[in-house]
Image 1 (cartoon, rainbow, N blue to C red):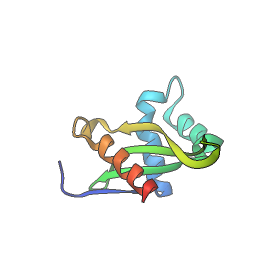
Image 2 (tube, rainbow, N blue to C red; image 1 turned 45 degrees about the vertical axis):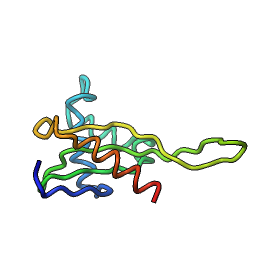
Image 3 (cartoon, one colour; image 1 turned 60 degrees about the horizontal axis):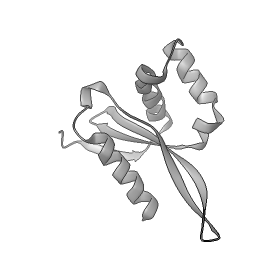
Amino acid sequence: MSHDVQIHRASEEERLAAYRNVYEFWGGARTEEEFVAKRLASPAHNHAVWWVLKVGDQVAASLGAHPLEFSYRGRIVTGFGICSVHTHPDHRRQGLAAQLCRAVAQDATG
């Protein structure tokens, strides 16, 4: 694995790259442009915090973290749900998605 790995909340440009990457799985019959436009217009996708793991300049893995509230022992606590986890084909089988999930969970728990 490359030593030039960065994990952070996605910029708008990186979020677009992540949407283009996941098109391979969730694009359906739409064109890539239609798929990205639908994601950009989606209230659910806009509500999520998007994270990326970059190898060099490429978005190698990405995910969305949706803020959620849970009831626990009579109290409302905040949390998040992870969605749309994806690793670019050039970077699969290296544990990058797991690394990204761990970093997002660590960020959420301090």
